[in-house]
Image (tube, rainbow, N blue to C red):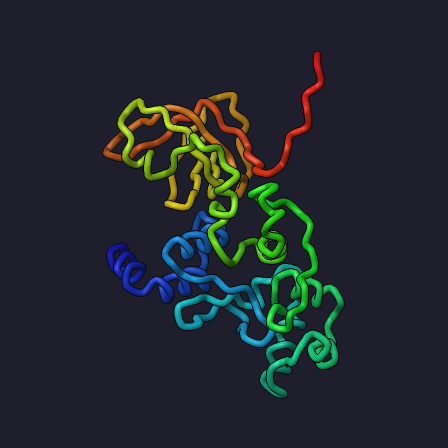
Length: 260
C-alpha cells in the first residue's frame, strides 16, 4: 500500500492530494497537507461560491477548497449556496448573492475572508488573528485572511512568503538530511507536529525532526521557529538535537529592552 501511494503521489499528485484532503486523518493538520501539495507543484485555490462543492474538488491541475473548509460558515448556508446555484445558476456578483441567499451576515463575512467572492472583485474583509509568518503579512494580506478563515492558505508555500525576511545564515532540511554526525546547522521551519520533546518542522523542501533538550520552551503548532544544535545520524537518518529553539517573526521589530 505504501509503494502504491508513493507511485500515485509521483504520477498523479493532484488526485493523490485530493484524496488526502477529503479523507484527512493522521497526526498532521490540514494546513500541513496543503503545504505538502504545494511542494509537489499542485496549485491550491480558495473557496468560491460559484465553483466550490462542499468538499475539495479538482480543477484540471489545481485543487479547489470546498465550502466546508470555511470556518464559521453554518451548515444551512452551505446547503443554501449549493441548492440556489443549482436552481438558478451562478451568482453574478456579491449583491446578487446577498439578494438570492437568506444567510446570516456572519456567513457572508466568513465567505468574504476566505476569498469566496474574489471572482466579483470584492475586497476581502480583514481577518485578524495569529499568523505564522509574522510581519511578512504586510505584503500578503489575502494570505493572512485565508489563514484566519480557513486554517491554510492558497498561493505560494508559507515559508516562501517569509523567505526574504529570514536570516541569511540559515540552512534548510536538505542540509540536515545530508549532514554528518556532529554537524551544527541552524534551520527554520513551521511546527507541523509537537509531541513532548519531539518536533516535526516543515520548510520549503520537506520535513525534518528535532529533539529539544530540557529547559527549552516548546513552540506552538504552526509557529515559525529557528532551531540550533547538533545533527545526530542514526540508521542514515539525521535528527537535530536542538539546544536552542526560538520563535521567529520576520518583519516585526522587537521592542527595545530596558536597561536593568
